Image (tube, rainbow, N blue to C red; front, side, top):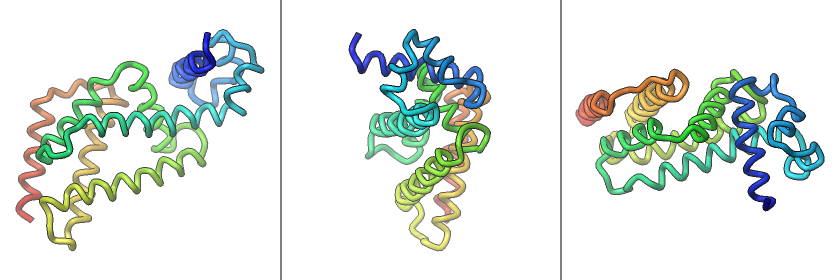
Length: 189
């Protein structure tokens, strides 16, 4: 088994255990045992449990978001961009959903370390600015662009939370209707 395969096995196992038992309820020994590796081998890849958790909740999450975002056509209408982004969240595999769920829990302050939460909050700030840039296409009034961005980011976070944390299967048509309604309302500004 290659080093990269073993490291990936450890991450997959850790995601499963962190999802089931939480950060504080999962020990590094639990992860090593479930991943069928020795503690020294696990420590070869990760200095400690927090490093492994950060690898999953921050690095893996950001990588996932980048992959999802890059799959959306940049020249699509705004309604389509937001719809496709939310549809992607519904179609993620079990591992991706578990990573996303852990990141949301940390972002909300329910799980993990304050340091990782601060990194996610800093990333969130950048996401807000990216959304602001996207939304400037329909809202040219700089005075209300921040409010428009808050509304769309809040809407996106609300629907994503329902999909990921509450496991709700929101019909595509319902998502489209909400996005279209909000976008049409925002265009009047």
